[in-house]
Image (cartoon, rainbow, N blue to C red; front, side):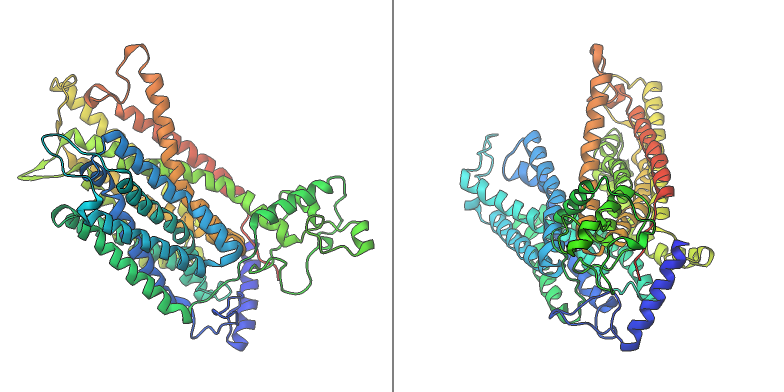
Length: 583
């Protein structure tokens, strides 16, 4: 019923906008004027945005993939200090998007936020390149096993550049995907279908940048020096900024809607003030502005839903409101759209929470999957495979499968489901959750077999690799890559599509935060496992010598938690009510 109502609304708005050739979603040009469909937005505008994202990811991964190495070899930091600095910086990169998103949705708009934070990012990259190029800005090389430490000014310059990049990423990450999706008119059936494809190609560009950074840049950094290794992504970031600005005339813009925190507080305060007020017999009596315009700038009106009914009291028109005509104080009376905005956020929260466990699984590919590979046979003929390089299979799987999904699977599914995108966002996310469980099961089975071989050959108490090929880890990396095609893309698409129009950057930022929280959750589970399995002098599940441990049980534990998470996701998604715009 909801799908048919939404299709009728989209068709009606599409017909109205087609009569004059304007977009039907309220988008504007850079000067605030209505925009024509034929010469703005769509894939032509997105090409500039996708290039910007690819270059930014190229720069980011060019730093992150080798940062620990740089800290240890050029700044002479120890393992613990280097690891702490890396995780702190990476965590900051995934938390600062909340700041950039609030600025974009509240005051600046997505375009201006991307422009300002890209400039900060580029300056940070330039300082990093200078810092890594000039010997006077680095400590002296190691001499006779003595490693001179950087002075205060050298530390200050390096970490200033690093955290300027983190701040810059905070304005780009949540806004680029949302701004790209803004280029497609959601009231136009064809453009709405293209919007689903955009998210696929957006993540394709992310992984393309990651692959290039993990191969080309790492090679340059290792054999030609850090100055060139950081200078090349700095150049590409500058080209990306130029490309982004060139497309300004054909972009479609959405108005920022003001502070979302204020609107949420207004609904809560108004509903508490009226907690004794009776609901009207007809929901049509709830307060809403007449006409098509919403009280929230840059947002379409939302249809009333009967979930979370208590919040509806914020939109009940009391006798006092009618008597004094006091309809302009949102701390006493809110519109239905403002109330539904908060309801949407609350309905999305359980779905958001299940993403944390998914990214806990993804966190294993850069931690225990690598440690697992370090105790397997790494020689294939005369060639030695570095355990960390196996993540390339994950990236290649992602890059190879995105076009297959977009060009083959979606059209085939569309014939059976009748849905424009083939599957709903929740169906897509659920598929990825299943694949992530299979990835952990694969890792557990490989580790069980490895430990069996270690026991049979008497290697349990010897810290050596087991004669079992490291290539047995390839399936679990590929399954993680496939899972990300479904869940990572489905999640960002879900949060953009289902979020209120004026909160799309904020909701995208919250989707990104699940990546950081997944890593934290992995660390928390690891701490609990270490505490409970090492009591009584036992080596525990994950000792320094993995041949004595039970890493397989840790993988089975993550599999069980992922299965429980899938059950919670299925329950929440079955009760989820999709957003419906109001006529």
